[in-house]
Image (cartoon, one colour):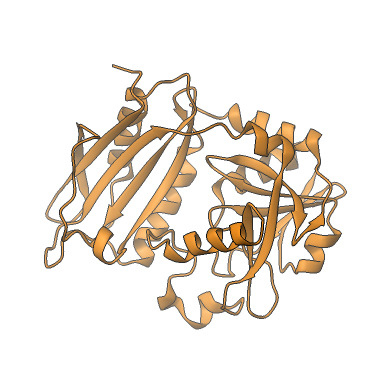
Length: 292
């Protein structure tokens, strides 16, 4: 049955900690205990998958990144086909005529236990037509780490998509205090990183670039898909060490993510930046064509 505004599946786990199946449950009824480590410690990983017309955007890329995050946190290896089946069942319960998302979450489980906890929650989201058209005002914020943090201090889990999002939410509040919509993080030694929930993409002529993925940032699933499409259109693409000067000099820039898709940047720290409306439209038309 379709047409719900929200849907929830919870996973069953085997003795090895891998999900063996899932059950759809009432999303309005509490499903976690107060001792769940996702809530008390933020000890878990997640992926958010956009849905368009009821179909997920590049689920294979999200599942691969989920598996990488699982490895980085030493969580039990998962059967990705089980997670994919849950996502599809949740998606099928939602209204296909409204853009939505499904969040896949794996937690270490209940304090003192040995079995993980997992769920897939889906719901509709607000339209991003305005921001895709008009663009974002962003501020640059120091993340407080050097650009080589992933190599020098891997235990800080930079590059894993964990559910510990307090710092990212604080960054959004700081952006609001500064009259901005979003954030681009900068390393303490002056290199561009990523947004709290997005990947930075720059255009210089017929070349697209993004920050290197060895800088303790997430490998962007949406950015990777846009690069594949752009290469087929004759653009060159690269992963580089980028600075704020590169962002200022770029012909255009975007923050891209699996739910908001490609949102152009229209100002940086109050300085206006040109919006490439035609390429933004082409980006989003391509991304919306991928659902299924």
